[in-house]
Amino acid sequence: MTETGKANDLLAQIPKAKGLPPVHLWNPGFCGDIDMRIARDGTWYYLGTPIGRKPMVRLFSTIIRRDGDDYFLVTPVEKVGIKVDDAPFVAVLLDVQGHGEQQVLRFTSNVEDQVEAGPEHPLRVQTDPATGEPAPYILMRSNLEALIHRNVFYQLVELAVPREIDGEQWLGVWSQGEFYPIGRDA
Image (tube, rainbow, N blue to C red; front, side):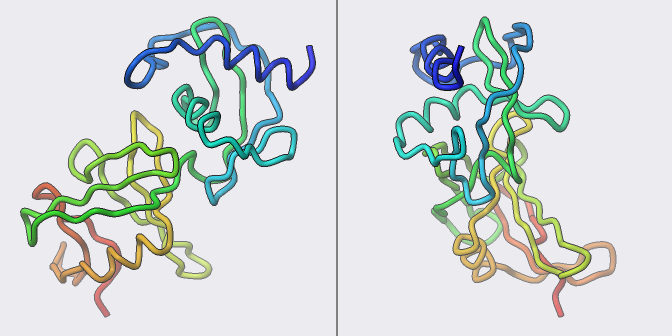
């Protein structure tokens, strides 16, 4: 079967239902890797070409699963490996409700998923030890994160307030009563 045939066959297997499919419950046999990649900027590629149809990307995004360090597209009868450069999603919009400790930060991803930062969807910032550049993430579902887009991160920086943690000064943001450090306070 050709690569294009594999992708079309995979699409046909996705159950049509409201909400996200229960991919965590599906355990089909591994069928091999396909030439699909999610770039760091959130662009999905198939056979080296960007997938331009947003509804198709959205559909594929509903069946992605991470097992260990590997990513798969999973249906009830098939599991295929794909490559993910960084995170499978990108948080592209931020909506802020309230202020201070009662503030709620709602993120929207490039595939239109929405989550509110909090205990079930924590924020984290990983700093590159060589460059010092921050890479902020939010947990979107299960063990799948979204890289927070640079413009959205700048919004977080504008919202940041100082707080002492373990004797060190940090800047961070509040959401649902949780404080998330985003960088050291100079």
